[in-house]
Length: 206
Image 1 (cartoon, rainbow, N blue to C red):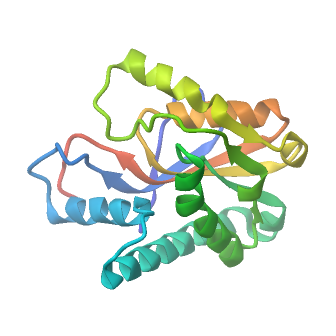
Image 2: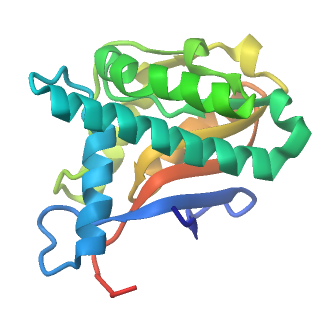
């Protein structure tokens, strides 16, 4: 998967990239390349226990391949210094979703790259409203993002650490900004943001 640059206002000092374009389901008339990218996002995000064996296998393979791509980027970016870099996933909206979506993925990325796994140093307390794919006003979206105060981090662990942040889909960048702020207030140095996909609304044939 090729990477593309991501721009998030206020984070110009960080290297931000995504692997795919994500077109919400309401966006019609897209090509097969975009349909394929969308399905990868769906397969990655789907943390439910499948009844169909084939579907479960697809998700496991997707997660593993995405983890390899992320690890490859990290090794290329940091080289031998990767052993001092913390890889941290932006937590999902509930403890259960966070466990299903991020624990194994974070383990794989760190296994393949040699980075430090930050998963066990971040906790989700209670549940907040997920905002991806939700058609809401900008003010309401900002209000829901503020619910991220249900994320607790191990400040002692993150202090003075170089951190690379992962999230599955970036739309406005509000979730990323909130998580970066929380980590940097604890003394972390966030250098990179990696996203599986960047939300797009206008399809242009590659």
